[in-house]
Amino acid sequence: MAELCGALIGCGFFAVNQMHGWRDIDGASIVAICDRDPERLRIVGDQFGIERRYSDAAAMFASEALDFVDIATTVGSHRPLVEMAAARRVPVICQKPFAPTLADAKVMVKACTEAGVPLMVHENFRWQSPIQAVRAVLDSGEIGSPFFGHISFRSAYDVFSGQPYLATGKRFIIEDLGIHILDIARFLLGDVSSLAARTKRVNPAIAGEDVATMLMDHEGGATSVVDCSYATKLAVEPFPETLVEIDGSDGTLRLTQGYKLTVTGRNGTTVKDVSPPLLAWASRPWHNIQESVVAIQKHWVECLSKGIEPATSGADNLKTFALVEAAYAGAEGLEPVRIGDLLK
Ligand code: NAD
Ligand code: 89V
Image (cartoon, rainbow, N blue to C red; front, side, top):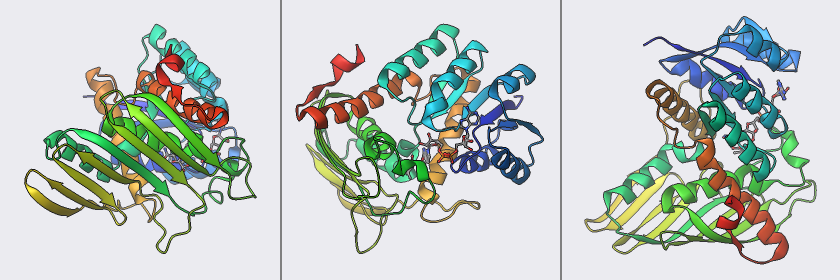
């Protein structure tokens, strides 16, 4: 099979992980990069040996024959860039948060669908190996049918030094981090019918909320609590671990700090270390996220080569994005929000 030729737009903080990921993967390579900032273009171009460099995405699309484009810019530019890819009939990966609003996200999905262009949102947290290990336990039937879940991300890690824009937006933790944890809840327990939420801002130096608690009804009958905080100082900092508790009709599973998975089910109790591998280019504590970048990009190459819809397609991500909108609306109105109404 011929290698897929891709381009990366946005050469910032996180894109470096994506570039390492592309270098690790067979079947695809990045042949051109684009960034408005000449310094970022130089740094990433030199680090990964990419000669074809552009400061303007439209110029890049006009000059390059691309099999796909990987958009790693921040959210404000996602809609015009995805629409540009759709207009050029170039399959597209777009970082999360996919769009500024659910209304924008719906338009972007429609543009790609109408152009017949594959679209995957880079929603990588469900691809973390500890989360995949939890999914495998559920699939094995060991704990029976889940009726309760608690998916939790609590930390005091300084995310603002690497990503200063996170301190400035009116929306913060649900839009940036909660979106991943809500997606994990959907991945493990299925789609959601209603959501109630409460938020707080504890850190006075930032503009948005840094604590959020969500209560969700899943269509399959389970209830879950999803909680996130960047204001939680613990004895051992867990960033960026997502902790999971699921109770089922025949047992329980617990993914606890230190990547320990304890399962009590039909065959008794097992305790496993499900730590992610430390890739050659990765660094702790980010290695969990870094490994998931490779996994989701491999998935994209497989889907694109075989003509399969990616697990986190644009259409799928609308259902996660609706939970983000519901959480803000629910926290503001102090009322539960019906998810079906948002997806109409
Ligand atoms: P960043 O600000 O460090 O990098 C963004 C880059 O995009 C900048 O270099 C900027 O110059 C460039 N850019 C912006 N608009 C452009 C345009 N129209 N054309 C060309 N270049 C443009 O941001 P970041 O921290 O790398 O975040 C990028 C995205 O990745 C965000 O959406 C963020 O939420 C997401 N992210 C995801 C994860 C994850 O685990 N999935 C982790 C961190 C960040
Ligand atoms: O995944 C993200 O989008 C990151 C982080 C894990 C730091 O919240 O912003």
